[in-house]
Length: 192
Length: 251
Image 1 (cartoon, rainbow over the protein chains, first blue to last red):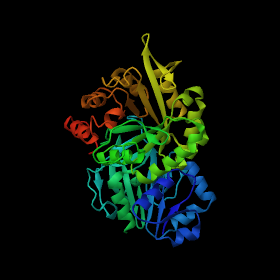
Image 2 (image 1 turned 90 degrees about the vertical axis):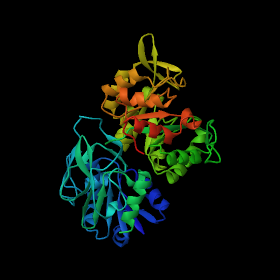
Image 3 (image 1 turned 60 degrees about the horizontal axis):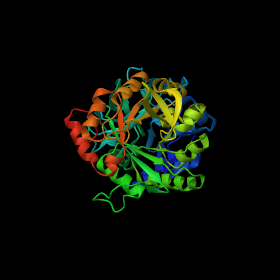
Image 4 (image 1 turned 30 degrees about the horizontal axis):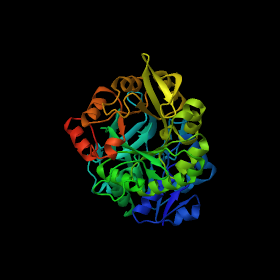
């Protein structure tokens, strides 16, 4: 069973649909026991960072997430909440990754919306994925590159397309909405 | 590099795709799911589904259809048509839509843009502008281009950006259906005047029209219906052509 963490963020259903298409059963839950006993945990999200962090703290999910030992995948806002802090609502985040989330400067269209390829990529999440493959992004804030960056992308400036530290994985793009390439990345995670 | 997006639009009436020919590889072009899956297989970057039924009795069927689309489609999609409230949006997003597009309701009650954006985020808030050039000015029209308003197009675009729109779908009524190309002037002006992505719409008739709109304006996406629907320009062929023209495209 794959646990998809339920919190006040959108886009959760799309992740479940994608897992179903890949033949995996999943459960949308905020129950600590269900999260602790799942084979894998996915932390999706579209929404506002400070509101989401407040909700996670109220529900005690911040602690639950930090303690997860199974393979864990944050998506989009999920990735941003796993960093040290975010400029969106000026909030401290979970601090799993050693980097900060900042607002794109208005030198180009914001949000960064659409399909973009990779500058660099490495690690098990990107098995059979090539640099020129495109994945779908929609975000106004980005995680700065750091030692946990396993894939980078360029929009206005280079940023972390994916991060990994121990069992914690995260993508700024939406694998569940990135056609065949996204399905491959999800499959790579699910087979960890 | 961020790619320019090619977006087919499907008009849906009573759960069926309006008009259209059968592609070789699908059985029923009237089935929105089959048609959408074909577009995805051909390389569409996003899809827009427009409900033109707009009757209250139909809403439940529409939500069911959006649910089915979300299960089958693995690229982002926007739904529009008859959205009047935050509750309408909640139901559509819950069914699995990635974005919603509002048009007449945005003009009649601009705070709705703000409400949707605050509640669900600007990334899912698309505001559609139907514009027409008349008596020397580009103005905003509602109700499928039938009802004129006092709003000037560029000013309205800036206003909806302020209210929280994450994307603008700009349709030129002068060009729509002509197949003479996109309205390059107003698309360029609007896209320069705002910092959110603009989707050009109305007038696509040949492959060069897409090249022109991407080279001569800062629109980041182009939308078309009939040319894809009748397979006059297969999406695969269009994307190969644009790549050869050095336009950044996802192949």
